[in-house]
Structure formats: structure tokens, C-alpha cells
Amino acid sequence: MSKRNALVFLVIVCLALILVAGCTSSTTTTSAPAGAGAAATTTQVSTPAAAASQDPIVGKWSITGASGNSAQVVFGADGSFTGYLNGGSQVMRSGTWQNIGGGKYTVTIKGQSAPVTWVLDATSNTAYNAAYPTLVYSPVS
Image (cartoon, rainbow, N blue to C red; front, side, top):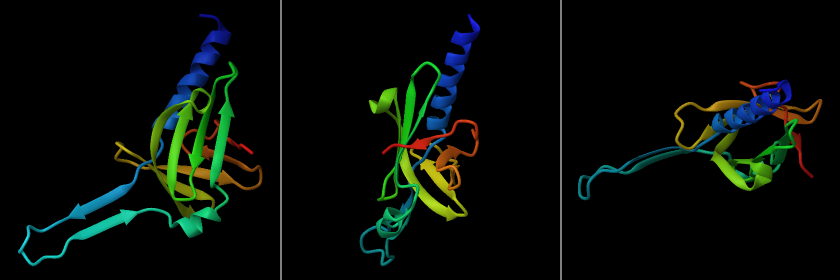
């Protein structure tokens, strides 16, 4: 395998890992049987739409590899998170995000137990998964 092919392969694998490390909602629901007298309890962690719509991370972010392959992540104003491959044509992961302060965001991917941290670098106007800080996403206008 040539060095160029190895590099392209590595970039694609890294992009896939970033998307795999993504987000999901955290929901717990408990219900008592009818007539038991206990009230149902529901806990959901998400970013309120009003606050999220003003958050600087809201929008589409993209990274392009050396081979021209691209990946995108979308931080929705409603607290949703979606990761795409192939120029946005293939959904890889989806879930939710929450601003935890200091330019950091918790992203929880559906089907994964551990959330990941994304960082918004306001100085360079870029975002990245803290586990892969060299794979930097830029905003898409």
C-alpha cells in the first residue's frame, strides 16, 4: 500500500471514529402499574431550543480529508446531533448535545453508553471531538 493510500485510509478511519464517538439522548422513564398510586417519573436531558438556537455551535460543521472525502456534523437548535459521511448523504450517528460551558459540549450518541465531549474553539471558529483534536471541523455557510 502506498503512503498516499495509507494516509487516505487513515483519514477515512479517523472520520468514521469521530462520528462513531458522537451523541444520543439520555432518557429514563419509570411507570407504576395502573391503580398502584405511584406517579410516573420521566427524566430527559436535552438542550432547550430557545437557549440552543442562540448557541454558537448550532449549525453544520464539515471536514474534508486528503482524498476529498468529507464528513459533517450538525448541531441542531433543538439539541439534536447528526453525523454524516459522503458529503452529507449517509447518516452515521445521531443523538443529542448539551452545552456544558467553557466552549465544551456533551454529545450523546444513540446506542452508546458513554457521551463524548466536543470543543468549540471561538478563536479559530472551529469545532472538534476532544478525543480527536487534530480532526478540526469548520462551519458550513
